[in-house]
Length: 302
Image 1 (cartoon, helix red, strand yellow):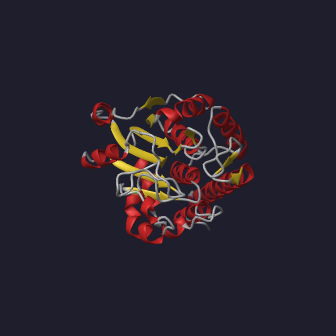
Image 2 (cartoon, one colour):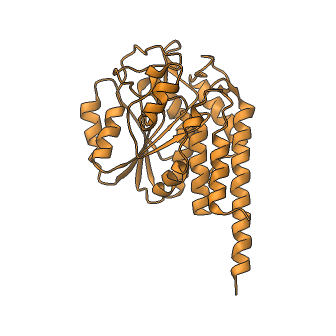
């Protein structure tokens, strides 16, 4: 019978699919997914930060927003309050994604230079328990942001890294989800990433309590929701057909594929069908776990 820990291993294996050939999952830390999911069991108010700027197109990418709203939806179903924070280039994209799922999630847009006023106000909230970064670009050791090609992002951006540093100092649990090494939270893996990435200087330096790596950052968020589903014996993950709808919504709102820079139904250069396959595989693991738990429960009766 598939026990709980082998179920988590199956989920990890699914999200570690390296279809994009980035090799980032070779640095993946086992059990981080489970530890992050267990931590969220006690979540009261979660702030999710997301947004990677595609400077060539002056907009955000398709990776990040979907993982953000699917995690937000799962947390709301578990009665946690959710706030999403992003930069102006991602505002319309996340606004439309939140509306598509009819979430109660508040969206806060942070302009460059507003950190000093905005971040302490967010962290002063006594109900805030968790801070999550999903495909949120993070600073390198030289203080710059870089894309996967190793080119600096020159547009001024709000520096969310400082929010995560301050949150950890206050004892707020922090979680990072990334797929390239240049996202907030990858500081946990910095020595390995700096030496092993083709453009090692892009590696982020910000540490978090739990770091989740995946073939695509959206998948990392989906894997987290799959773990939460198993912990709560409640299907919290969306269906493959929902992925198509949500992806179309954010593309119409201006999102582009971060690898191709095209406005199309793809994420990180991978077609829609690949993302639907990942969701289908995660759903199969959730259903199998639930069925086996039911069988185990019946066998223990009397």
